[in-house]
Image (cartoon, rainbow, N blue to C red; front, side):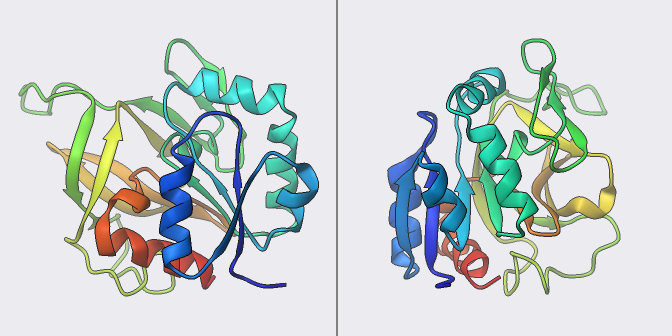
Length: 215
């Protein structure tokens, strides 16, 4: 199987073309598809997404793609969720009530705090470039999808909610928004998620996509 053969799941929600262009720049052959067989036969799968969690999960379920994503994960295919796609990997979200997620990484999606620990207001959504920092207990990014990326390098975020994995070992990297550690990259086995948009994050983002292709 060609590791550069990538399926981007098309469920009507996501910045598909820019993700496709980023992957093709890295040498991948990209198929934007909602076809079960095409997704299951790809060597890499990306779950993109923008907007509200409940809408994303509803569209996945309507097309039967929630089950397809579970099967991709079960067969060990590298799976990367981007932005909303990352959040949907978790158990549930608090956005507009409680909505069940895919449950591939244990945890919840919670609001990005609008007030820092010392009482300062901060703008929501979190929009713009922010630096990747090591999550607790980590000394570098080696052996992860951030390999050869240095702590302090910046990527581009647009979000109002954030992933909160139950297991701190599932946090590969954070960023700091005010004094709040936001999960920037999460991972468990073959399942990965980026809260930021690698396709909009310049050379650092392209390096993330290259690393994903090389897993």
